[in-house]
Structures are given as structure tokens and as C-alpha cells.
Image 1 (cartoon, rainbow, N blue to C red):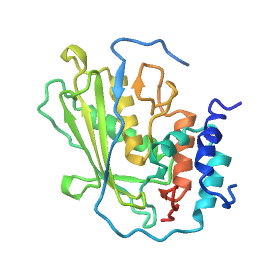
Image 2 (image 1 turned 180 degrees about the vertical axis):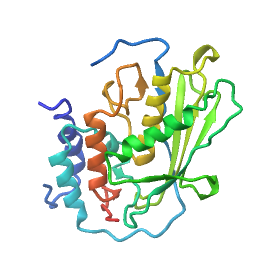
Image 3 (image 1 turned 45 degrees about the horizontal axis):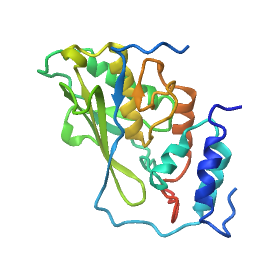
Amino acid sequence: MSRRGDLVPIALLALLATFVGVQVAGARASRADAAATLVESDERPADRSDVPPDSADRSYVLARLLADGPGTYIDAIVAVDSMLRRWPLDDRKPLRVWVPTSSSIMGWSAEQPDAVRGAFRAWEHELPVQFTFVEDSADAQVSVSWVSRLGGEQQVGNSSRSYDAAGRILHAHIALSVLGRDDRPLPAQTARIAALHEVGHVLGLEHSPDQRDVMVARYDGQAVGLSRADVATARLLYALPSGPLGRSAVRD
């Protein structure tokens, strides 16, 4: 049985009840230095009014969620506010990403930009989304910044997304800590997982309840890279139209 096989149908039954008459279809031990909080993204609706009208796609989306949801944590996305958010792919142009290549922050390493670019490439390898790295931050749709440390205890990453009322992500930002506890540079593996995690939020994912997934809220050393559930959830999200499930599911 899939390790998440029972979650999605249960999470969606309550949602489906509102649509009367609509047809719906190796782990590692925890280490103190590795433990880190990977902060969920800050949602900021953009000031956009171009919301397409309700469509018949709603029943298609709900059917796909029930059919393909097991083995994913798509229910965590639905549970937030019944909205699917992702980047529109209609123009097929790569998303423009700016990663600073220098920093005066104590403990910053010239290896960190490559690690962040590697996180974008890892997700790109699994999805119909492409990234291109730009030299001017003003030209970027996604920007990255380095900070000494973030506000929360053991917090090593944070991200924000702006999106329109149809769930189309427009811009995003990632902040990554350079230092961990006791002002020591973060272990390379923790920094790599933090980058993968925040890029996942930028793409539209929410937190997973499983410590083996990159999208778990608190990293304890078990996640070593993108898991099957990480990939399956992201692929399902990008196989569906973005939009609010409570009213309509809008196709790009």
C-alpha cells in the first residue's frame, strides 16, 4: 500500500461533499547540527482582477486528485485553502532566476550559488518547468538572497510567492541562512536540502508530513534529496490547472 494512500481520499471527501450533483471522478538518525526548520512560504495575493469565469474543469481536477493523489501529499496543498497554485506554462518560456554570486556575510561560501542552482536544476529535471539564470535581479521572476540567520529558532530557509486570483504564481523570493546555531556555517547537506525545500515552495508545494521528503517542515537528516512523493506531488500539481477548487479550477 502506498505510504500516503489513505490521506488524499479522506482529505478530499469533505471537499467533495460541497459539490452536490458534480461528478468526480536509507533513513539516517537525527543529528543536532542537521536539525533545521524549513519555513512554509508566505502567500501574497497579487493585485490582479483578470480571473477567468467558472469552468467545467472543476470535476476533472477533483477526479484527478482522487485518482492520482495516493502516493503524494497533494492533500496538504488542498487543505490550505482549496487552491492549487503553480506557475503558468502557456508561453513555455523558462522562469528567470537571479542568484547572487557574492556576499559579505560571514561564513558565506562561493560554493553556495552553485548549490542553489543545483536545487533549481533538480526540480527542473522532474517537471515541465525550465529555469534560466539571469545576471540582473530586476529581470528576475524568482530571486534569492543570503542572510546571516532568519528570525525563527533553527530557521534556515524562507520563501514568498505572489499570485493572482486564478492561482497563477507571478513572482517569488527565497531567503537562505548562511549560519546555523552557534554562528557556525550550516552543514553542506542542510544547506542543500534547504535550497531544494524552498524551490519546492516557489513551485507551489506545501509541507509534507513525512520526514523522508524534502518538503517536510523540519529537516532532521532523513531527507537526502527529492523523494518519490516530492516528485509525484509536483508532477500532479503541474498536470492540473491552477485555481480555486471551491469555486472553479482554471486552466492556464
